[in-house]
Figure 1 (cartoon, rainbow, N blue to C red):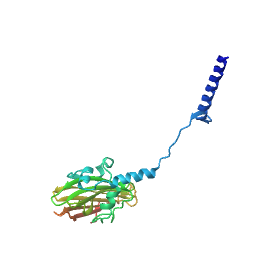
Figure 2 (tube, rainbow, N blue to C red; figure 1 turned 90 degrees about the vertical axis):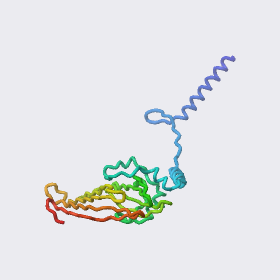
Figure 3 (cartoon, rainbow, N blue to C red; figure 1 turned 30 degrees about the vertical axis):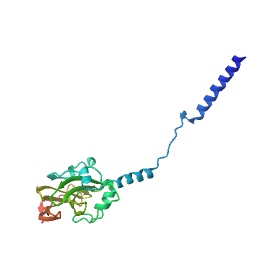
Figure 4 (cartoon, rainbow, N blue to C red; figure 1 turned 60 degrees about the vertical axis):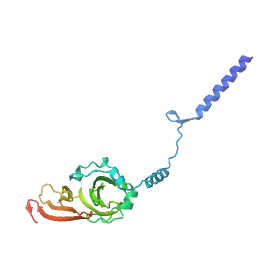
Length: 239
């Protein structure tokens, strides 16, 4: 009798266990698959936490140095590997870059709406100021290199200006590249090509080439001086 009661108890126990396992399964057309518990991730909380962490960063010259590399003699924006550069935090853009008018080049102000499109590039220390360069990438048009000078005792922007770019849109292709010819001067070449009809059978492309230089004063003020310019349409020089 005891054996019978024990057998009945074991049968009931196994039956309850099987029922419990079945309750944890979800039936589909292909059979039964385990139910997965999904925890909702709050993206807003993650973004808010990241912003708080960035706000704690002490933005100073050492921060800029840590995000840049040594200034090279030559620069050609088309050959720069943007993905390997450090992105610029939005708070840094808003505090120092977007609030300062671009002294020469375009646009008038650099917006901070898409901080992921800005990268730190290179750095150099001068006797009375610091120079660092940044790159802005517009996926629809251009990559633009900006020179930024700042005072030495704190980050206080003196000048921001375009010193290089590469891009194209429709019938236009352009680039500006250059090299340092001395400690305070950059030799620069600007080439713009226009082909309005985009017809390979015709040779009416306009090519405009300008040679200029960027001069840096001992106080960090940048000037762009144009020296010579030629313009061709097809094989004929028109300027």
